[in-house]
Amino acid sequence: MEDFPLIRLEGISKYFGKVRANSHIDLDIRAGRIKALLGENGAGKSTLMSILAGRLEPDTGRISVEGQIRRFRSPKDAHLAGIGMVYQHFMLVDTMSVAENVLLGHEGGFMISPAQMRERVRKLAERYGLAVDPTASVGSLSMGERQRVEILKLLCRECRVLIFDEPTAVLTPVESEQLFTAMRRMAAQGKAIVFISHKLPEVLSVADEVAILRRGEVVDAFERSQVPDEAELARRMLGRSLFKEPGQAAFTGETEESGQGARDLQQVMSELPIARIRGWGGRAGRGRRIAQADSVLSLDGLSCRGAGTAGFSKVSFAIAKGQILALVGVAGNGQKELVEVICGLRRPDAGSLKLLGQDYREFFSDLPEQNGLGYIPEDRRGVASCPELSLVDNFLLTARKLFSHRGLLDRKRALRATRALIADHNIIPGNPQARGRELSGGNLQKLIVGRELLRNPRCIVAENPTQGLDVAATEEVWRRLRVARESSGILLVTGDIAEALALADYIAVIYRGKLVDLFSAANQEKVDQIGLMMAGSASAD
Image (cartoon, rainbow, N blue to C red):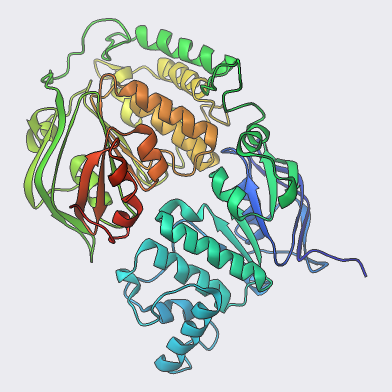
């Protein structure tokens, strides 16, 4: 009998309208192995794994499980075949215990006593090295512990294939290492692991096999012993060099098309009836004038209660023009509420907040049309965009005043500007009439970043701006933020220490709603402790 892999995908294709997500993909997934799936934004990785997990059905092709052809019409069908996916956004009930969440929906799950439930989950967690208290309320857990609960849910259902979609995006460095240890243990016990990641060092450290997707096709596949170095992986993933070679200029993210897009965008903006933005030419805007104070954002003892254990207390810091301050922490430690207060989405309970030299009440009572506040939300689909609107309408969500004159919206110029922005940021698909839901998360983020920076805001709040972006898109967003700082002050909210160190002048670490420490990014002694601070294991001297 032929030696079948545990899972075999053959000729898988998927289209969304005219957009090709996957094209005739063949892929084998074997028990006891960790397969990393690499590709730039829009390459088709998440679509392919959503097909395997039963969330989508392919247009062509077939899936075999141990040599038997199977058809998945829902995630339940995939679970019955032993396939499960751990998503970035967890699906847990905060008010229930860990054991109750793990066994929720499991056949016979509530026919056993609470003590039996806890013991069953404890043994399962011990077997795979996923330390978590079965009696704890999920609402009290860290993001890393919540992720372990999601994994235990799949293991309890005896899933043989576990798919991890950007699993380290919400973890501290210590939690990431713990996850990799658990993944290796699962593989050693016969599980097949698929690991989707944009972080090349992680892939090189944990993967047994690597498959690279580009524009919906598998273009390379390696065994561990054949995997090239980080620079070569990036080149094969992108189809071009990212890192600087001897005698060559470093990659800037620009292509001939993007360069033309930037020129076209500048031309469109300079033609507006009132060029409201500094740098685009024309007359100054008619909107309210903003004081040109160096301080763009100032917090003094700011506090806000959140739901459950969330919220923040007595937070103080200031950001001046030309500075980037990185607020570093694991998701769920008060960053979300802090950003919402700064951006006017909720009111503080105590303390002082000033934006561009004005009290927040005055600032938000009459938002400036120009040189004001730019906000790049973490939730790109729920807050930053409308999935059912076209790209041009999503572009206009925060840029509409630039294209309005005497109450009339100039949609023709807005369409030209959207086309130019798409070219400038290499957004796929390149159709301004495409719906927001048709874009991958990374390509949608490029549109949002471009839209927000277009207005040259003097204060920028960037909330995990590169989460889920490929290496080239990440470098491009970093480059644009560095350029923006010349006329702005930037609050960078991130859980990625590498991102904070690459961009920030100062770093503030937040844990359970309080600033653990605030220090210069040049302070190596403090930098070495960031991971411990994020986990609450270190504090300011």
